[in-house]
Image 1 (cartoon, rainbow, N blue to C red):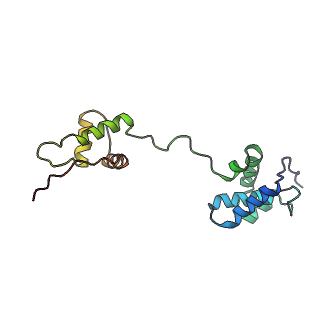
Image 2 (cartoon, helix red, strand yellow):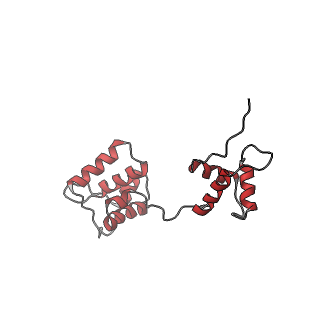
Image 3 (cartoon, rainbow, N blue to C red):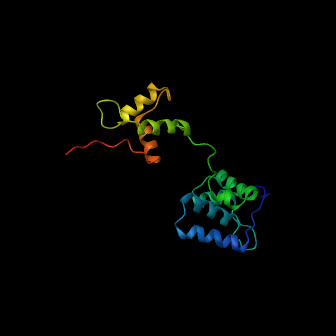
Length: 162
């Protein structure tokens, strides 16, 4: 037979009530609901109704027993929010191609008059101009488009004559 748990979860009445409300409302992400249910089933305090081990909790919820143990230890070491929520990402997955200075150069190019024979700047012209001025070595037109959209910068007015 296995050893008893050395780190027991004892939920207060308000913690248990909060977790039960979270697991029943159906508006939270599924992962958060699962973690709340793991904590409720792991409760060995005075409000816990049944004694579950990690294997039983995992089988009931469709998780591996190691996942159950990780959620429990996260609750004990870092608190309820750490056990329920994902850890925020430290850095973005891909660094920005255009920082503030390069964005300023792009906006300055957009505000300048377009090349001769053109009525406005196209995305391809902007990309070529950024490369020609050695502001960037490589950039796609979609990056330029998203940057202009984010900064609410128009590509110049078209000269429509009637």
